[in-house]
Image (cartoon, rainbow, N blue to C red; front, top):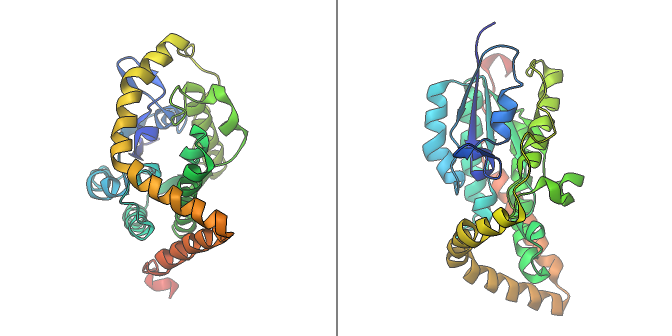
Length: 283
């Protein structure tokens, strides 16, 4: 049995933030790697905290292509929605190029739609709704492109696990160990019937005790505070403008226009993409 090459691309979620291991992070992708084959699995995690779709396209994908993976995970998009530069057309174009390049090499592509950060943080409606709209737009693009490229797609934006506090770390954005294990278990369940996960499925039960309340508060007061400050400098001014626009439309009873506009933008972004090339013998 030859070695299975598994490469993971993405941001802090795939890097493993929330699932500490020694001096670093482990995460769902590393947990899944252990269950892909009974023997050798060569796992490379290229994910970097804070990465956006541009980073995956320009920095991570070229390295992944050199590794020629059998299975490649691309889970990305939340950081794009948390930037003032958010552009669903750019997100769709980048993901299309990433998916195309990796699948053209014959790799099996793993993708996932992601939960809404605003809902996870419990933001007020006027702030949460614009973020939710962006999240739905990215998920719609990921859904469409996953189908286009035959990806193994995980619906991680829904389910009881989102409201289970034990699944999440102190920041309420990254899964804790139990949440990372849930992602690994669900991906394994999708791959096993395809004959692509022949090893033992990851255990859903944590290996380590959850962080103490004191440790969680310390994280929030140090790394968590720094993260919030960085995001506020970039996103908050625009998010406040979006919230004002949201409230104005609600007063006028025209909120549906915002949803229609977002849906139209997704449709236009997907329509602008070139259709994938078909093999000559399929013409």
